[in-house]
Length: 82
Image (cartoon, rainbow, N blue to C red; front, side):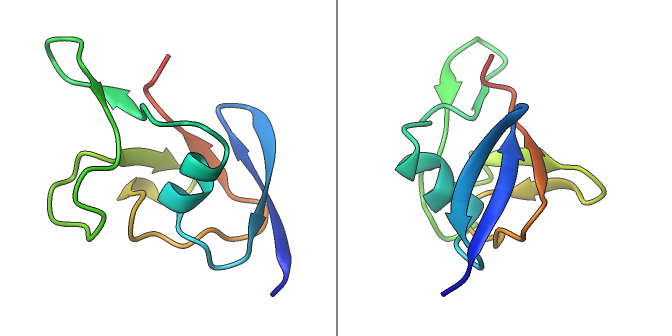
């Protein structure tokens, strides 16, 4: 397995190339990825891409589901968790 470096909300994180964005974020203690319209934290829920609760933005790739999108070296990811 090769190592990948990605940036999440401006922070550099180490990942395994091909690991899902969702698995990477959980491994680094990030559970909330966005907030609902009522302000409730949202993150990984189903883990199979059906619910869309884990949406994040990837530079050059638009909005993706973190649980089914593989990490690629150099990827820049933005969450709405802040």
